[in-house]
Length: 351
Image 1 (tube, rainbow, N blue to C red):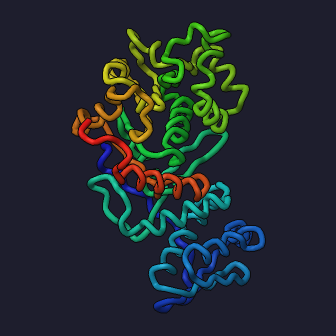
Image 2 (cartoon, rainbow, N blue to C red):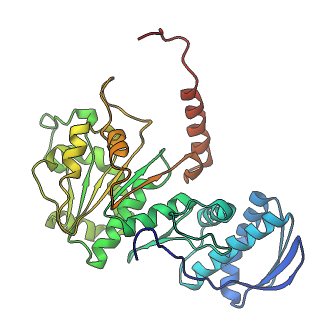
Image 3 (cartoon, rainbow, N blue to C red):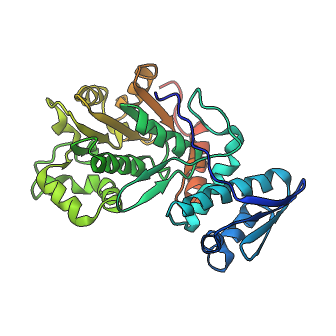
């Protein structure tokens, strides 16, 4: 099955006991799981009420939902997804409920790969390691996670807080555990140090650690800490600044380039041409946050223009609506985007 033929598996939906235009009752067969689904003091159901402006009333292992037809159907989809997750042994936190609501609200106009059919039921893509299972929390995350499975080179671009780097590292950890790759290579352009790291104290790992901390954080979240340390010592997980990729052929590896907007066009070409047999590459960055000297074109922006139609390459673009950190982050991103769209009258014209 190729990258454009992803089909979500059917889900087992809670049994509706009664329905009309704006009211129905869902009954869940497993009482224990129903309790986990509703949350402590029914906090998950209260969140559904707040976000969708509906009335949700639990009674035993059933829940009555009343409100606007569209919103109540969205609530049904969200509960369906979360119930399925619990049936498969997963857990449901408040952030998972937020994600399910996002997915349910976007079901009708969900961002999907070209030949995927729209479905009444929706299924969230997942990344699983021995330590943790992550489910998509936005439609774009869903597309991104499916693209990571299918494509040899994936670009994840967009604002901070959308999960593009975290999911890339999670996917890499999953591939390593599966035995699909022999190693993970993590890299970022050390723009703050001009990639002149020699003057910094310590060995190479200590020199580049500050720039790669977000990648470390995601690794430790997906794999036990002692395994991460042993893998780094054995070279199974390699941390290296972009400058150290030159001249190498990266085979049987998943290679992640983070903060790629701060590469030059030559650096990006050098990096992409390192891909070896049975290798995977994931490139993440935010084209609106380029720290290169003025007048120097970002290698990420250049690559997105050149490689869009190349076979085996997937480009997934995140937006402010995909921010999954604190809701304030999405509002901050929108405010900055709006300001960028307005010409600065204080700047001289004609230059």
